Image 1: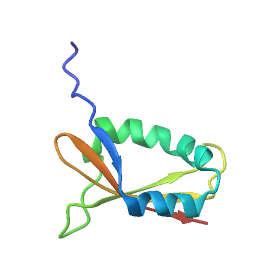
Image 2 (image 1 turned 135 degrees about the vertical axis):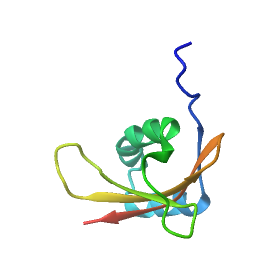
Image 3 (image 1 turned 60 degrees about the vertical axis):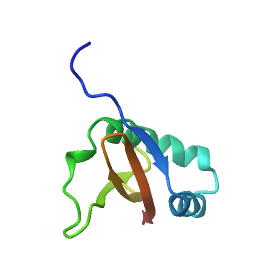
Image 4 (image 1 turned 90 degrees about the vertical axis):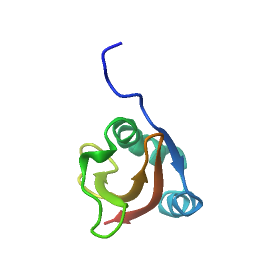
Length: 92
């Protein structure tokens, strides 16, 4: 074992799932865009500071690696076992 932390489970809230469906009818395409973020958050959810006064954190990612638009804003929180995806918003 290399000493790397065990990846956390990822859980999508009902709000996140509903917002995701509203952003992109082709959920598979959106899931593909989120794959890298999910892989990263499972291992390093502490990479950004929480929003002041909360435990919620926010990241902005691109849906496509080459095209800078659209982007996605993702809100999440985490504990020692899980990352909880709380919300997602498209930024055009």
